Amino acid sequence: MFTSAFILLSIVLAAFAALSIRHIPEGQVHSLYRLGKPARLLGAGTHFVLPLVDRVVHKIQLGGQTLKFTDHFEADTAVRDVEGTVYWQVLEPERADCVIDQADELIRERLRDALRTDAANDADFRAMNARLKLAANAFLRERGMLVTRVDLSIA
Image (cartoon, rainbow, N blue to C red; front, side):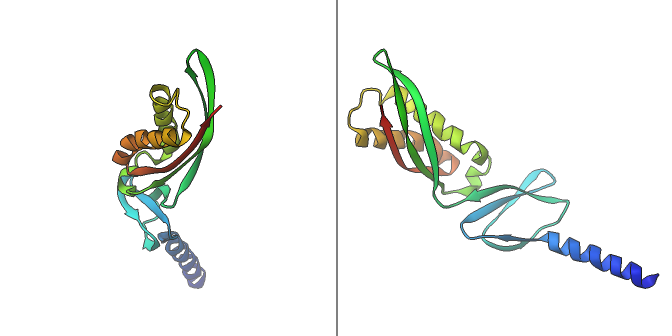
């Protein structure tokens, strides 16, 4: 009786210990929430967390990420198609944590706004992409993210 209780207790403690250890790979930051509120960010390495109390909410990639972009906008009474790729990365995970789930949509929204106001009649794609990058970064820098390159073409 005592032996089976000891074995059961050992298994429960081993499971608790296994759930308490988190290994974060290089190039990632995990945001840890304790009882539903932001507690801290876990950088690369091994960390101890409290199971059932702590929860990893976001796994933030620090390396470059890509976003395929397609859109339509009206210019000179004609609808024009835009497609290409946007390259972006997280610079400040503390700021980006609260908006990381909406990052792709935030970037798309900023590029759409910039296309409607600035790039409608631009034949120089290189200059247009540079202006789109600046327009997106003006908004995203406050949120800890940076667009590193914009490669869009208008059809």
